[in-house]
Length: 48
Image 1: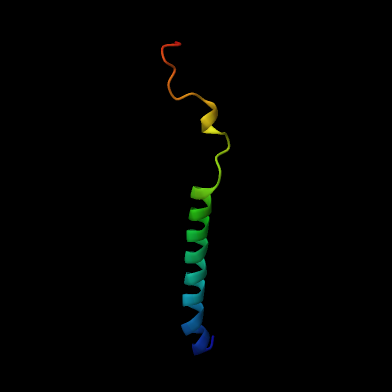
Image 2: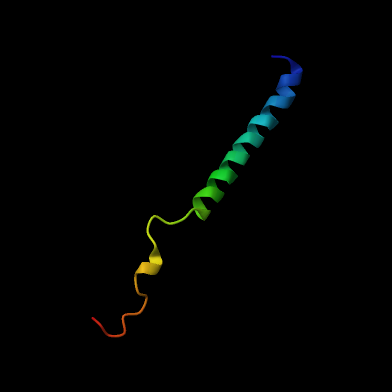
């Protein structure tokens, strides 16, 4: 393997992996929930 690739390839692979981790984490934390939590009342006011 040429010296140039030994110097360039690891930072590129690491940068790509870091980008994918950050993108995936951000996407999973900011997407809409499966169900709307506002449909359920928070307080029941003694309706138990």
